[in-house]
Amino acid sequence: MRRKTIFSIFIATSALVVCPGQAVANPEKMREAAMQIDRHIATFYRDRQFTLPDVTEDAKFLRRTYLTVVGRVPTHEEATAFLASDAPEKRQALIASLLESPGYGSHMANWIFDLIRIQDRNDRTSLGPYRHWVRAAMNGNMPWDEFTRRLLASTGSGWKQENAAVGYYVRDRGMPHDNLANSMRIFLGKRMECAQCHDDPFGDTERRDFYELAAFTEGQSQLNRDLIEPLYHEFREDGTEQSEEHRIALMLRENIFGLSLEGGGSGRITLPPDYQYRNGRPGEMLGAQTPFGRTVRLSPNRNHDDGREKLADWVITRTDLQFPAVIANRMWRRVMGQGLVEPVDDFTPIGETHHPALFKHLAELMVELKYDLKAFQHVLLLTRTYQFETNPAPSAIHGGDDFLGRRLQRLSAEQVWDSLITLATGNPDASPPPQLDDTIYLDGRPVLNGSKSMTQLAEEIHGLRNERQFRRYFAELVKEIQHSGSSGTDGGSMRMQPAGASAQGGLIRAADLPSPAPRGHFLHVFGQSDREVVDASSREANVGQVLALMNGFVQKEIIGQADSMLFQGLKESDGPRDQIHRLCLTILSRPPTGVELEWMLEEVRDRGESGIRNLAAALLMSSEFLFLQ
Image 1: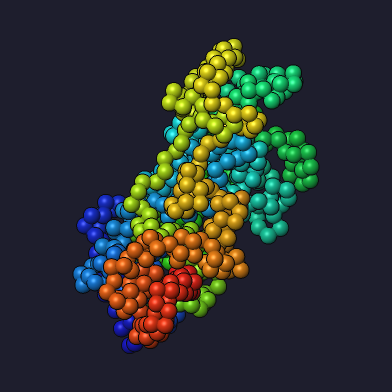
Image 2: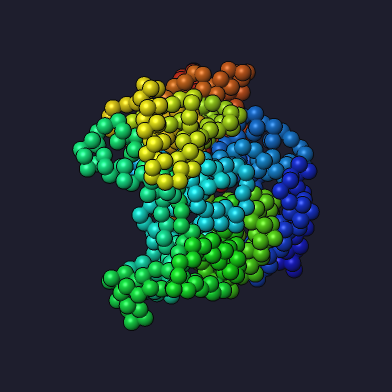
């Protein structure tokens, strides 16, 4: 009888209402989708005889939702407005408003930058346009299937935003097989990297399987690269490598031709000289073939030039529910704190998971929502499951979520940074994010400023038909640059300013700072990924983090700044009690308890203004601030 009552209460209280302003999906469907998920989990509770967790209080829900959706703590004003409201649907309204705020796109950018290893440069080549495109895709809520297809199949000049996704391959220039292995891990949760060199002893992928799959992406090259190579090598051969003409040629070679891609994928590949298995011989020509799902096969007898498009189509539409299940699981982890199935990048067949009915339902929901990640997360945020009280214990289920409450988790480096920026400056989303700087740089200095941009330069160069036209164009370009009088002399290459580079170390969102952050930067110290390996960020503690909070950024930009937003707000307070109340609400998103208020008042009585700063520092270094509950 007890279990039946819990089951009934669970279902009856999970029918949440969507804010009327929501546009990503039909409100009734969103509500029903959330209820369906809660029904699945209620069944799980009933079968396992688990005790139903409590729903978290408003203050914890507020902080959890801000950090989950927009990656920062709420401002004092935002916290006050929510906690003071007695509207029955205020939680649903908060979710809807945050999903439609600029902060959502910024926080999603942090997630995708880590997943697909966004870096501002590949050696000498600027990947600024690619990064800008990815950021815009997150801001514009590009459907995941379209985003995937663009990454896997785009060709052309990366300086055209419609082609900028070519940066996905340019980022791994010279390492196409590593790129393919990462693609399989990212989009299908399939770990195939071992099969580059040998049959996978821990999986079912043979080396031949990997090469047949790699054939889809074989034959990549840079767009019209043959136009510049003869001229570039002439400078090297005649000993004029330090000349201005050579540096201009290097600029074009690396940043115009380098940020481009042609060759849609030949669909065939030769086995390497060290191939060691009986199912093939070194140098044998293989046709592209997919290793699972509905088979796609290309003949080895001719170049197809559409292999990457066929690969993308197979990944998205011919792997049954694996493609939507993998991204649904990633979104579950993002919202709930732990993947429904772990690890999220090592796919377990749906029927072999601890809750196959729910996993299948989530995959089908992703398809039904047309791969709208914002709408999918909205559904998860509307569930009663999301509102459960925090559970600090490890999951009771091996390899997945037991739904017994959100796992206690340290904030990511980006969440800590963006929260501190909020305390220092107020709402960091009040200003628009930095735009792509497509100024032409030579040796780090701008040239042709106001007369020609990188986008225009790329369009003109890629419009040339032959080497003769290119040489004529190059000679005129050299004259234009010399006439502008702005070139440098250090022999370096053209530099593109990455988004946010004008404020390196400045008080702007993590998504707008250089990617990855340089060594020693706050983000690096707190575990931001180096963008070399998929999903490689860390939340482990270290001594450097303590020093950064005690003596570094926090002391310099918040505690030691009388004009920081945190202390500006305290000036409006009416006495020590009000100051302490505001301090706790601003940093922890909740008022102080009675016990906390008493010892904090004692600190202020004993030390005055410095006592307030001591309290602020203590709260900022507390586990409550640094952890998501």
